Image (cartoon, rainbow, N blue to C red; front, side, top):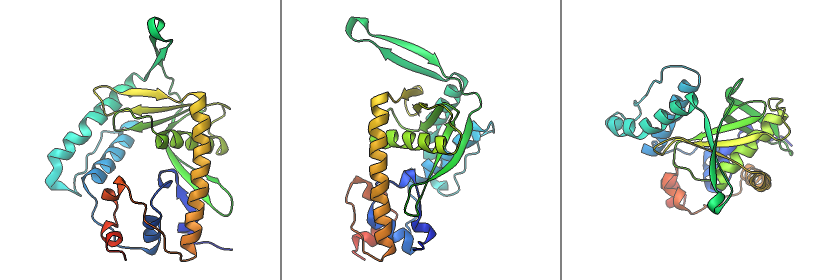
Length: 247
């Protein structure tokens, strides 16, 4: 059975998205204009790529020129922290407990890293799962986050997904690659490494989310009206006007 390409390919960042939002995107519903957080995110992403590729960052405020000053303030700290961390890529580990607790610093080797590498894998039933890691080497995956340190399920799932894709795409050759989030929103950049237990839990969570997403896409392809997933994220929904009118 053939399936529309929009319903056969999905990204790591789309896992756990609202089913109704997925349906409306497929139907080509008109989206609201991007809001401040979306625009600042796009600017940070583009600037991050410039920095990683050794180019002078170009800040584009054309989508929201009246908020130029606020946007500059929003992206300044993460970009400064990114540049600082790339010059000195430190991982701080806490070892031991109580009186024996100590911090150990490690400088990560980023040699040969691929930048924003687009990857994909076949996840069965005609579906393709895609993702793009910020930095990936033969034994490491590094993803940058613009906020404060938050070891969330979503963050862990993304790293594991990139790891699996990296292995299947022949980029990662180490059987047990190290996975890092680097948080850029604080006073200083902070790298966080997933431990073995977190990797196992995140992989199980990822495959569960993948199967759930495949099910949603299959139902959308059959014309089934999807329910709205009510949550705080509704305030960021590009279709909130349509959904809230019950269309």
